Structures are given as C-alpha cells and as structure tokens.
Image (cartoon, rainbow, N blue to C red; front, side, top):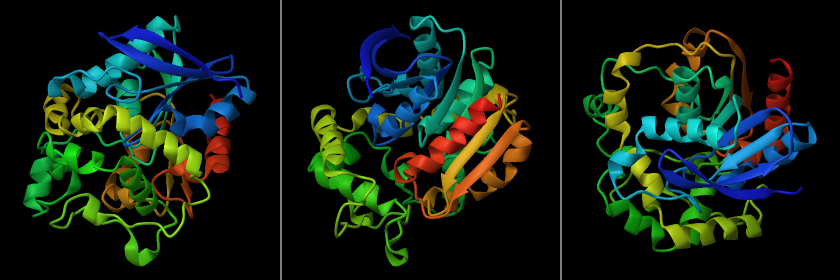
Length: 316
C-alpha cells in the first residue's frame, strides 16, 4: 500500500501526516504511546474501499511538533489541530475516528464542530460528557491516589521512567494491556510503589499482532522524541474539565460508532460511560465489543475493526 507523507501547518504547529487512498476523508487519531502507524491496517482497508485515510502524528508525537508549554496540550488545542488539518488539506468535512487518547479528541471534535466532522468512531474509550465533579476529585473521593493518570502528572517523573529503555517500556505496555496477557497478570491502573513500569508484565514472546519490526519502529520513534509530548495530554485532564464547562452533559448529535475489546482494562472504569452511550450519542449506529481483544483493538483485531468501520461508513 503506497503511503504518502507530508508536513502541514495547523493551529500554530507543524504536523506530520500520513495518507493513503482517494475518496471521502476519514481522519484517524492515535493514542498513547503510539504514532500514526498504529492505524496501518485501517489505512490499507480504507484506501482499498475508495476512502482517503489520513493519519497524523498527533501533537507532541513522532514527527509532529511538541510545544514546550504543558498548557498547549488542552482538548481545545487538540480539536483545533484536527480542524486546522482539514483546512490545510482543503477538506470541508471528514469522518473522524480516534483510539485511546485519540478517542476523546474524536468525540469532542464531533461535539464542538459537527459542521466539519460528519460522523465519529471511538475506539477503546467511550464518550463521557463533562460531569459536575472533576475527574481527579472523583479519584480522590474514591481513595485512588495511585491511579496511573495521577502518577503521570509531575513533569519529569514518568518521562524519565519510560524513556530509560523505550523498547522494554513499549513491549511491556503493549503486552500487558492487550488481550494476550493471562488473566492473573491483567493490568491494574492503580499502580504499585514502583510506578508505571512496575505494573507491567514482560511477555514470553511478542503477540502475533505486534511484529518485531513494528515494535522496533515504535521504539525508534520514542528514543528520538521521548514521552513528554504524550504525557502532557494527561497533564491537561483537570484543565480540560474546566474548559469544557459550557458543554456539561452535552450530547453528540452526529452518527457514532464505538469499538472496543472485551479484555480492555479501560472498560473496567469506563463501564458507566459505555452503558450510557445510547443516551450520550443518540445517533449511535453500533457498539462492537470484540471478545479476545484488549486495549490495542485496531492492531489486535484489525480485520474485525476494519469491517466495523467500513460498515459504519457505508451506512452514512
């Protein structure tokens, strides 16, 4: 599959964009700790089905700029990046899909700019409208002071931990949050004293869905960039809650789709949001839960995700 690469200007930063195919635009937003190529299987399928697949390195990742200020990674910046990307490519509209942290970007892009994003697919993280209590206050009330998102807040701490050996960090992260990990070793987001890496399991062998060459590509990317850009997204969780106050309880009105693996640990704390999707996304066209997949669903179960996305797109 021929992949085209270019660098665009969007929302005050230079952004690397990978593209494949021609036709109606489908914008693919990756999560942490990933890069544009986490969508490689979907790009191939979309291009073959006569769609224009667009997969950027998101703000702070890969070959895209990583601003120095933590405050430059708010949800409004991230949605603005996607609007500016459409402008740079001279596209009036796109369907937007997002995985992991890319899912809140996609959901909120559809919420804030339904004129530009005509439909939305979220992978692994369901839409959750802004509630009356901030996310970290809810965690504090529940006594979950070692939740991984809290661990990621102090600048420099997680960066230094994760970049000591990017290959080992990524290998263990991908395995431990996947559907391949044994039940007894499933990931617990409430971290032990040793930090994030101490919560992970070393795989006996790489899963079939993660070839050694692909893992090496991820590792080389993070050796070059470090992890600060992606971690700064987590450092805006409370700021995002404040910024989204005008949209408290807001519903997404464009057509929506949700896809996740049943073995994804995220569903362990996002269950209520998943159950509420028919109310929070009234034009929800489907919820697809894949039995054996974990968190990296579009890589672990590429064929099933491709089929679900193409069915959704053809129904629009």
